[in-house]
Length: 623
Ligand SMILES: Nc1ccn([C@@H]2O[C@H](COP(=O)(O)O)[C@@H](O)[C@H]2O)c(=O)n1
Ligand SMILES: [Zn+2]
Ligand SMILES: [Zn+2]
Image (cartoon, rainbow, N blue to C red):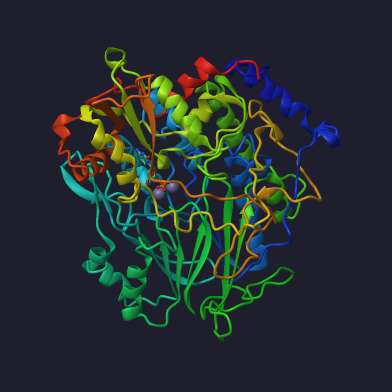
């Protein structure tokens, strides 16, 4: 497995970069590319959300294979193009920068803070506006780092209208970023912007989230929406799904509409990891740009009666439809979901002779140096097949969940209680990405299961109650984001098998400054249906099937081999779902409290550790 170790990796990186330009065409990976030029409007936006540390891009999927340096170069070209076209171009992000990849998460394992390497790399992008996600707030140290460093870096551009942190210097709660920003664009559009997190409640104690319904009553908000200054557009950035029932965007919209019935309101959402576009009314729409550096959300609007920007810039497609189909409006809109790869980025930069800007190149170099320094390519074992999160029913052997159950049964064993039967309950929301065939590395351990949830247990629970627990948990409160519309893939009924197979992709162990070429066939990927229809995907794809999962799954261990049922069992679970387990046990007639809960495994052995342990024990190292 050449290149599997850290040192080998760097050697290969350097070599790969040198030889790339002379690669034979057959060696150049192929994906199908953009269907045509992007729309540009009076105001045009590039939007990211839920990047979750994937700044390296998807090293095993060419389709999403660009890295953060490539995105930095892309945005530089787009800013230049916007000026040439005579339109305003704003770059925005809706949060969730942590938990999901080695580059963000490995530093916490080394005793540092999650994000201490990835956030400074992220900061190479000159965002116009950003807001905070719930993954910036689960852990007190992470929240404080965001307050102390990230928010100070972006200053008035980091909007956290309803999120505060306790400043240890004086013990007072303060906004992490700014509550709002009033500004005028280059071409003269006057914007009032907010950044609103959904009503998140699992935050660390040092932070506070003000519910949207309370925020809209606060004096600063009322002053902002009633400002005597002219406002041409309200811009609401939010880590907030654009569609789910838990979204608080409607609350914000109603509050603004009460005092400004005619001013356009544009929302940029996140959190549900979906490509989506929602129409609220004829002057109010919302975009959501997916997850994990798979998508750049692209949005263009024209018709605002302000400024000197062009409403129909020459030589490019322009926004052409009202928000509500069949009506007439002075505003017109367009949206596109761009695949995160160099083919797309280069194409939309008009195939400039040198795509890579010096800043972009240095960001790429930094990412690869850090990847090496953090040992992210260290190998645990070779996955014999691809195990997917949602491309197959959760009981199918193609799904990751039977593998998780096997690994939990084998690895989650307390030596002192190994002969006592145990039932291990974990939430499916803790698994974040497919485990791809081939090398399963330190980086992949974060990609698949980034959280550090501890294994806790209640000893000697009557089996009769424990046996009811899984059904009670799965019929109880949801334990993850609203999955209702998570994958809005438009799936032809003929697709019934999981087309993903790690063998198709590069090993991910060597740097590939990929020169990709177009292919005629269509690669599997997003097939998005939103309020504007089915033409949003910049690169057409064949659909990947999507199957929902239950809240939780359960694995057994140490049960009698003769098939008899034990009197009592140890009920083991992630600390993240402890309260759900206690509630469900009460429903099963067994009242326990947190005082009955103990650690089953050492608290340092977490949900991020059991799959690597399984891979080390049971998978070959010869990929
Ligand atoms: N310690 C944790 C924290 C979160 N989760 C899961 O992540 C979901 C939230 O992720 P988003 O990217 O959608 O904000 C949450 O609902 C849990 O399912 C976890 O398992 N453990
Ligand atoms: Zn997220
Ligand atoms: Zn989120």
